[in-house]
Length: 183
Image (cartoon, rainbow, N blue to C red; front, side):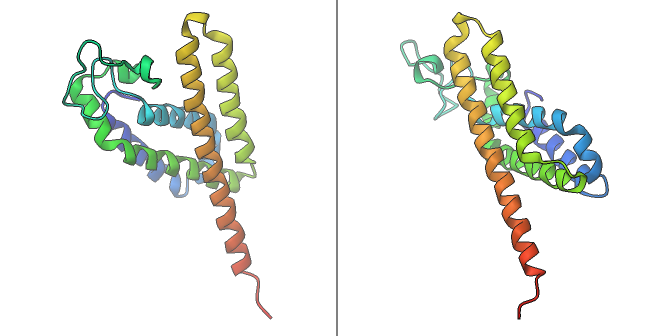
């Protein structure tokens, strides 16, 4: 977690490299922590722009009267809200790579679950549902609009996680079928 998207990307690459080898079984021990950090990275990668900056053209500041993120229904991460124009532009240029790292991180957790006999798909879904429930319990009425938008972002993460888990299961089934001798 950092205002500099490049550091976030490098950190995730390091985590994936570290846990992809012999330490894969240890990855399951850090599942909750890694899932939470993946959620934060996903939120960062899909956030709307900081107040006063234009999403489509980060070089152009919004003028008075231009619709804000609240009016355009985009969730703005608190981390993004604190970004400078340069940090935002760096994030915009790295969004697709950050999303790829989230997918790699989720796939790593699936592999770790396979090596430690944990049903990861249920854990990912339960984790995101718990986040949504806590959000609903803690945010006040004034936060309702942004809370709803955050819930939508979390649901997007949950859908992405389910696709990664399903793809891993499909690949495992395919690999298992390859091992069956044909008559």
